[in-house]
Picture 1 (cartoon, one colour):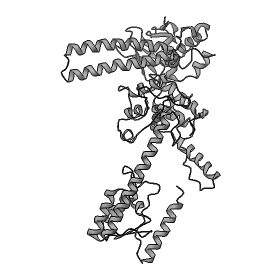
Picture 2 (cartoon, one colour):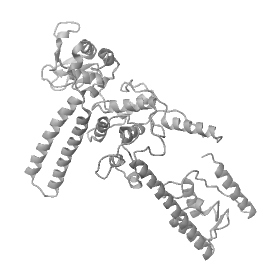
Picture 3 (tube, one colour):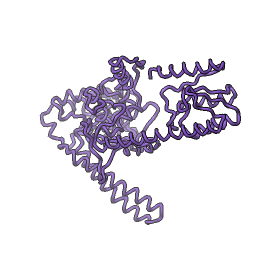
Picture 4 (cartoon, one colour):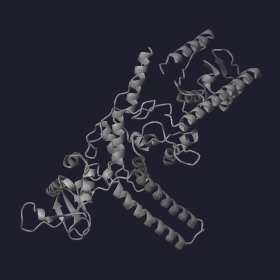
Length: 492
């Protein structure tokens, strides 16, 4: 990456051209790009092929044949060019001569040997990686946010990862774009303040590598400027099974898989019994939180748009009910309005202030934490697996119906039965996960302070958990806000 090897190769090739009194019309450099992997883009190589087809040159000087290509089919193209268009190919070691049959034989043998060496090396490395994964050891390569290369936890980064997972595990929590903005320190209405601001991970990695280079006396690489985190990077964090303590391994087939959902799940290594292999490193998030995040990401009904905002913007929108028709109200300009028959149109500011005051008073009472059900982690994980099983039965029944294996009434019977079980399990899961979905407000040492510090999504969930808010029409002829026009009923 420091370019020194490229410079040495350039000097040797330039000397060959000078000795032969050849005019160099172009240099093609693909620095740190493999000539072995056919899936890798080599922009300079591709440009060289185009330029030769256009007749810009009639000779190639390269440091070694395997610097030009390690793909036998690409070599055959150059051999054809030498035979049909008199292309001259010279290497710094003087071993390539495509104008003779012996030279072509040597080139083919050398390309095949180079290819074979790469394949053997790749097989050894892949087997070593599989062995590391089977033992639950941290994979080699670029470290993920929150972990060092040896698998130990970097706590200040891990705190950010935990908060990202905690917030996104909430069904109507912040969007991925909002989480990326929070990590970047961008002030947005929907960006949760509880997410710590971190420099971009790519910048941190280069700084860490430069520290090692400086200690070894090597040339430092340019450090990229800090910038905003992207939604795709945050998505990668939320998808990574390593954060839940799953041992992972990805082969080439999975890396080429366009189905991102499958590829992330396929990374989890499994034992002969089909159970996930647990890693030796410390998980940053628990199994249930990771699975809840995957479920929300996999939800086909999750809305995405250009702004990335899928969260509510106002405290009572879709939460408060109309006191006449009992249907949810919507935000309108500076107020709330009944979405059905327009029974209620109210100013938003005073209503929200009154609701927040009532909620704070309730949170200040000593028994508020008693309304929480104790969280049972093993049961939550089991519930998630059971729900997935019931949904799988529905899909299989649908496939059987499409294949005309079962009748329509059989499909309806199976679907109704499985959906009923899913609803029961969802109810149990909501009860057990209430503490997490409420952001730890009710069981905090100071629930009022925790509520005030929470983002909008958590505040809405706390309100919905504690009470039902119904808006009545404002009394005619009465000026000012009337608290009695807002009916706040505690939930049992």
